[in-house]
Length: 200
Image (cartoon, rainbow, N blue to C red; front, side):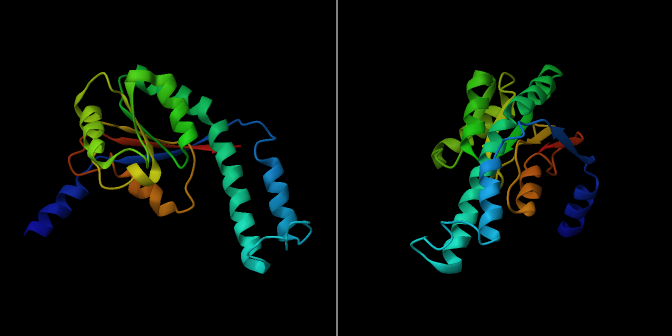
């Protein structure tokens, strides 16, 4: 009976709507790193065999490092568009969760939004995390919950939000769905809008 009731509750949730929003970023964003990736893949890099790990393992490590650097640059480049979107939602009376894989975009957003936002990253002490959640859930002055997708993407309830924004994307799509569901939980009574900022 308990299982049936839970299923009924889940099925009666309001809709969750996803949208992918194109964001203009400078064409040069991450271009050098992407060129280096292509050269590595084609075996044309002078550094391809000079990694201390050597061989294919060294190339894989270099590829990952270069792609991560390009992703981070892209994440930072999308911050103005994310800020514009979040500010508009807050002005309409919404509470918003913003996820990023990187701390730099979150720190910039936190500095700009000031006391209207709380920030949860991997370095946030565990003992302080629930206080941040409680503040977002119950304090009307706190409109934005900024979180690293790993640190804030699981295990917390943020149902005060009806907007979820991904400034940038994780390697693993399942991490996005987990993070979306911080707002999309059994006690949610409103439609949850999820926006993914996607560089053109």
